[in-house]
Length: 351
Image (cartoon, rainbow, N blue to C red; front, side, top):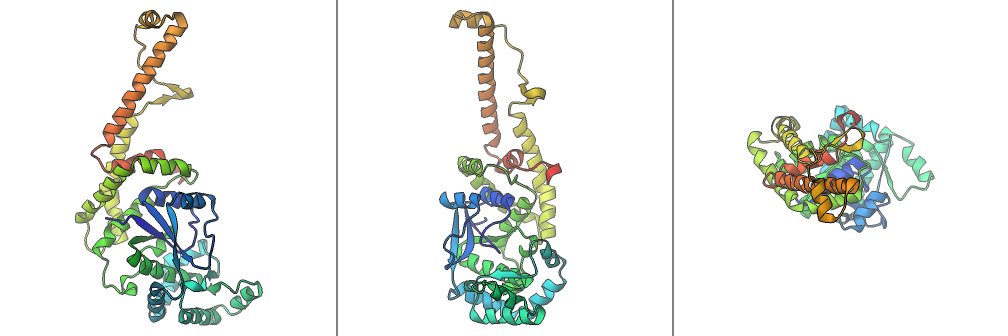
């Protein structure tokens, strides 16, 4: 089962607000990697709100922490292999869409030896860049190659997550599954199945970036039990894939086993709610022949009695729809995902 917390990388703040909302809906706690020297890490309004609610927190670190030492060593020991990988990998070439020709990284995220390695790499591949930034008074942050820096952040996030009981997550697909050998492992572990499957689910559940963050928090809290059932349900899909849990296998699993179930449940949930027709009018059942009875009971007549009758019909239909919706959710863990899909995702033509 995925852990209760996720650890976001490579940035201090989550810059994609659709993904912020996804992390909120699919994990109980969000964390990001923050150097000790950064006092107020969350300047984005939604992130500041989540931090105030105790949902988002900073995973503090400095260069003397064990995880920084082990991640730096892995990076240095495998530098040539990583460099070849990011140079020729199409996924890493796509990094140019989101990053510039340089990347600023706080020195507390690295050992002194790794800092020297980054500086030497920059000197050999982009002479003059480091000097330019020093001139602009940014010398308290290290100027690094963006491809190598983000590869290192993937390694660092995995090192930290392993000791903090968190799942490393990122909105950059090319960073999601580092080579296990670079992390000191031979193959993907069983514990990685559910987090990787969850990433595929999130990629296909595009949350509206403009959805009210406060409503999402309220929804998550109101449906905590169903959320827990949903997370436990994910492990049951493991029998459908081979060991290794490649993105191809997990994507196929989602398409064949999960998505059809969500579509069916979404249809059931939609039918259980009041249906609106053109012009914003409710599609009501036929008004019963009870206006006279209502008039006699409440001492009203005419239009007022009819209005009262409509009120009773609306109340009855509303309560029935609410109860029907709740019943549809009980006993079906994937209803959590179906409800999110119906309430908070962008329509297909806006994705």
